[in-house]
Image (cartoon, rainbow, N blue to C red):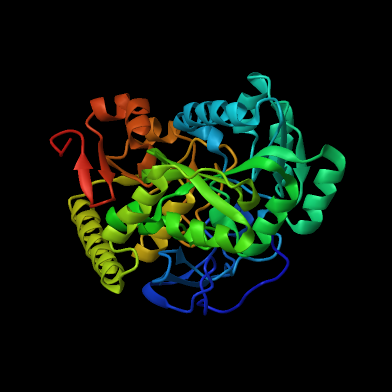
Amino acid sequence: MKDHLVVKDTLEECRCCKSSDLITFLPMGKHPPANMFVRPEELNEAQPSFALNSQACLSCGLIQVADQIPQDFFVHYLYVPSSAQTMHAHFEDFAKVLGQLADGGLIMDIGCNDGLMLSFANAQGAKTLGIDPAANLAKIAAERGVEVHVAYLSPESAHEVVAKHGPAQVIATSNTFNHIGDLHGFMEAVDILLAEDGTFVIEVPWGKEIVETNEFDNIYHEHMSELSLLSIIKLGKTTGFDVVDVTKLPVHGGSMRVFLRKAVAKAQVAPIVTQMVEEERAAGMLDRASYEAFATRVNDDRTALLDLLASLKAEGKTIAGYGAPAKGNTLLNFFGIGPDTLEFLADRNPLKQGLFAPGSKIPILAPEAIAERKPDYLLVLAWNFFDEIREQLTDFEAAGGRFIVPLPNPTVVGGSGTD
């Protein structure tokens, strides 16, 4: 849902609860959008960049940045979940959960990307429809047999979809809700799409885990919000929805699957909802000191990682990066790591291969480059998939290669390093 460009570097009110009780706790300087990869012919051109100022709402615990993404940025998008095998199993399970909720009714996936989750739902016999602005990814989804309505979700596009397909029994959005600048308008559109007795399911990284495990790299311009459960509850209350259940998930460094029903349904609320809100309060998500301590830890990690990389380079070691995720670009640009330190980034996503990372302009190659160039170390930027990556790179490790996992603290893994 994007029809404007906000040029302010910070927000004056919370995106969820509209409170003005905001603090700026981790200013990270100017960054290009984390998925604005650079083509070879653009290498000498300056990229647009915007201030990345992390703010926290002390009324609901929402971590947020100002909406500065250029208009229509998501119409050609390069991130796909399919390149990580971990996400195949995750989305197959998610599709089963949604199918049980829908009970034969229509399942809509907002921000369906390349259709991976809905392809599993289709295989399980569900009726599905995706909504996504990225026409290039809609083509990939169509190859999987997934129908996609190509558009940003808005009240206007929601009316179009309902007129053509009818209301959804279940609406899902996985790692899309955190990309939305106008969450109140988004909820208005969901209200239009969803049947009166339907369920809206949100999957996002859990802000509590981000703070407790130093996951600052989850914060970037496209990730406008890192949500607490309390922030979703407060947003729901003002838009006619109740949070009725939640499931903790291990993916992406710790996520949550939040179930909402329309308030008119007067659905029973599971005890875990109150339990998790209390966990957030106990973790200090409404306390200024928690965010100040988080910023201190991040800056300490920055110093530690840069010292480690400089020491290895001084020893003549060669270092590459594994993965070119958006979160990795936050880390590279905030820490000031460029091609003088990392010779290349290896990424399994063919849409990124042959391009250069935004800001740092490190070349992105296929994983086969690791065997060809034999770096001594790999800085794992896609650290949330490290177990899968390590399993894929047994030959690299067997030959003496070692991994550097940057978060929650820089750690060397493999060889005589820490396992």
